[in-house]
Length: 301
Image 1 (spheres, rainbow, N blue to C red):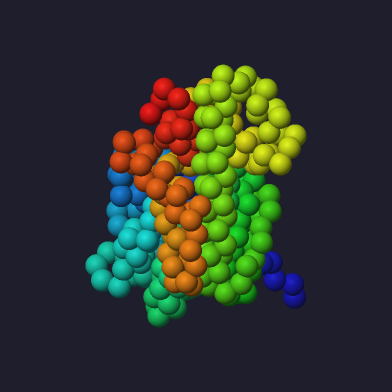
Image 2 (cartoon, rainbow, N blue to C red; image 1 turned 90 degrees about the vertical axis):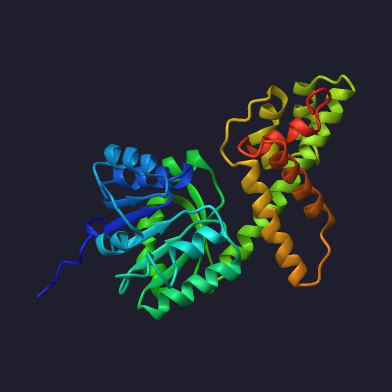
C-alpha cells in the first residue's frame, strides 16, 4: 500500500533574526504557501510587524521558537548573537530542540558554526550552514546564491526550502566549510568595492566624465560585478543599504582572522577593512558598502 509522504509545505518553520535578509526570506516562503509557525527578533516591534504581515505569531522566547517549529532559519548579526541564541544556559533554541533542523544563514566565523553544530548535536538536533552570497532583492525573489555545509541528511532535509529560496546553490562540504568560502567571497567583494571607489574618486578629481569612465571600465580589465551593482550609486551618492559598511567591516575581519590563523599576510584585505572601520567610526556604518566612496571622492570626506 502506497503511503503519501508529507509535503515540505506542511512542515512548521520559524525565523530568528528579522533584518533585511531574514524578513524577506520569510516573506518568500510564506508567499509560496509554506507554514511559517513563528518569528522572533530581539527587536520586538520588528517581529510584531512581520508576524502581522504574514499572519503568524511572535514567539515570546527562543525556547518557544523550537517548541513551535521543527525547521528554524537563523539570520543573526554576528558571532556573539549566534552563540547567544544557541546558548547552553538560559533561554535558547537548544531547549525543546530534539529533532529540529537549524538552517543557519548568517555570516559568522567558521569556528562559531562548528561550535553551534556541536551544541545542536548534543541535544539531538541538526544544523546546516546556508551562507548567502546575494542581497535583499534576491532574498525576496527567491534567487539567492547559497553555499551549504553540513551532513548529507541535514542537506536533504533542507533542500526543499532552499530550492525555493535560491536560483543556485553549491554544497561545499563538512560543517565550517561554507562559512570559510563565504568569508573569502566577501573579502574579495569588499576589496573590489574599495578599489572601484578609489578609481572613480580619482576620475572625479581629474575632471573625467564618470559615465564615460564606468563604460570604459565595463569593457576592460577594470570590469567587475561591483561596477554593475555599485558604480552608479557611488557616482550619484545613492547609498540605500543592501549590504552595510558595518557588515563589510565585520566580514573582512573574519577573513583576516582566518589568514592570521594560517600565517598569511593579506595587505589588501587589511587596508579594505581599515576603510570600512573608518566608515563605522565616522557614523556611516549603516550606509551601503558603496558608501566607501564617501571616503575617496574629492570634496566628500
